[in-house]
Image 1 (cartoon, one colour):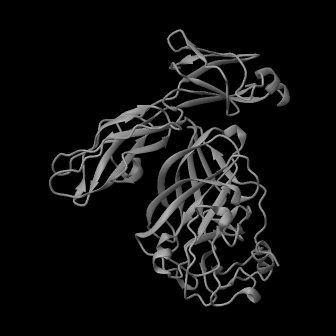
Image 2: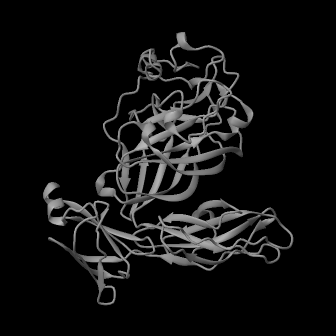
Image 3: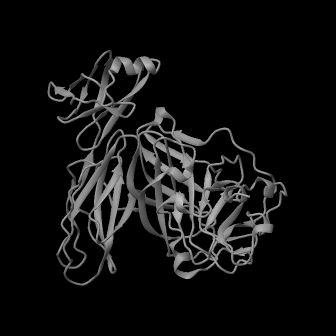
Length: 443
């Protein structure tokens, strides 16, 4: 029997009840072999759902989730008698509809249960975890083909009812699929059998996976999904994961640390140039003087100017060694301030900066592209379904007109591309700061 077939869990679910059930067939399990094992009871066999819950908001926000908001049981990668755990990776795959692209994802919410019907999950506040984001631009259908693009540490804050939201460096999705989830670094450090993943059985999408190795001492951190012993072990439900994105582009913020006195704020917050995807400018890092140890920085974001450093505006935390962060942008603009987080308090905020995409008023697509609007900037790039042109666009009339001629970077003419795609395409205008505006053709 192949490794992959060992992890086909549908036959296990036919028993209907999962009460400390091994998701690996019991005949292949022993006390030294690590496998995905459940804690909880399921009253129904999950059915494969027809559609994911991927919703675009009127404000340009996009929400991705497969679960229904409540978990049915918890799972972990442990040995047969539940005495030893090993580090694993739990991921959910999403394939955005082309009409939602491009979109920048930069927030994720997880449910980390403290207990289930069988007791303690051994999750505790401030255990070490990491957010992991992978891209599969060709959407091959095999999760192991995806490439790791984000690894960001965070401390777990478990709850049976409250999702934990973590901001991370924004990743722009222009095609294909992405996978997002976490790895339990805490288990690597302790070997404890924690049950960190919560699953919902309603309308199972078949898009939640675990990756791990079989030996207890052979921890798996997700650096290369194809190298795990288990391969993509498909889980029998939907991981309790919700992803948030914005459709106005992706910018990089930079700031300078301060060498001032107590609770000294960072300074010189700005939009970095060159834009994301190039070698980004780095902020100046200086050791703060005076009482208090700098622990990191907190980033606050709002869709309106006058950002306040309040929990409602909190976006992300970064360590003291990092003075840049990527963020998605709302179509109407996003505005930011940064504070320094010390062991004896939080500083005042920096200056405020904002980024706002150009306004697109008219679009004409023939053998070339013409557009009118506001705030188009010199250096703007035009994309057709994510494909750039060989030649630069021309920005005219004080940033109110754009004209794009020539072939796509593939060498194909615009007319030929449209002819192969039923005359339809998504046209994106990207300003040098990373903000974008997109419109479908024909409208």
